[in-house]
Length: 313
Ligand SMILES: NC(=O)c1ccc[n+]([C@@H]2O[C@H](COP(=O)([O-])OP(=O)(O)OC[C@H]3O[C@@H](n4cnc5c(N)ncnc54)[C@H](O)[C@@H]3O)[C@@H](O)[C@H]2O)c1
Image (cartoon, rainbow, N blue to C red; front, side, top):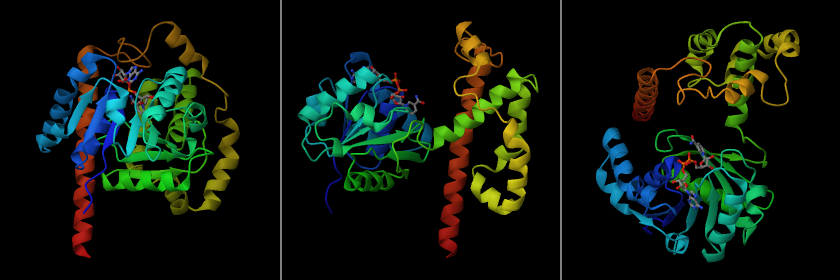
């Protein structure tokens, strides 16, 4: 069997170290580049701590090599995953620098959370090999990766990227059009706009919005998506509900005023102690921990259920 392809990751931050971990756990050797020595210095410790928490063999971290130079990181790599900060000029500069030194056959993927491929592929040498790969945080826990096909991305590159991600245990989906927000963030932020509008319009407070979701359709979302649920309920019923309520759902074509006001006042959420809700440092730490524990437990339960179903066949 051929050895797993070598992977390069550009940017050793929150997403970059997690993406490197995904591929190292899957048996790939991974080189990670970052211009900041402190980001590289803590790389192994961060990956090892994650592996320990997940009960995975810590030797996977040894397959990850930190690199100060892009040329060293991409040398011999079949895939490069760019996970540098979300800044158009920086990503365009990186695309030019990465594609100047990568082999012509190397696939270049960006983990941008918002930019269409057309924006950052502009400066690339060989645009057919540039593809979007939107991992979710933390990349080693959340299964989904949206694989975004730009107008010039080749079908073969999309297919190879989807194959690599699936073999590494991810759930890749093909985003066929190069649209801002891809699929999942469009859905998520459509819901968030209405959640914020309900508060702005005085219909309820922020706690009530979250209570409603966590105690109703939020409970079923991870096992039954909205379109499956629409089919379950009957499309005739959905049509009549849409005729009644869609005219009243918020359609503001930009951020809502209450959100802009909070940001202007420095109320940024857990990191400043106040956002839509009030947070002490202890409450913020407990909420983060509860989310992480929930994800680990829910995903373990899902794998166990999938294993049981497979062995019943
Ligand atoms: N944080 C999330 O939840 C999330 C989720 C999905 C996608 N993303 C996207 O992933 C990308 C990285 O986000 P993050 O949260 O890991 O950010 P981060 O700030 O944690 O990490 C960015 C890393 O890039 C490094 N860096 C800075 N300049 C660089 C350069 N010129 N070349 C290479 N590396 C450089 C930084 O030192 C840092 O280690 C962004 O495009 C972001 O939008 C983030």
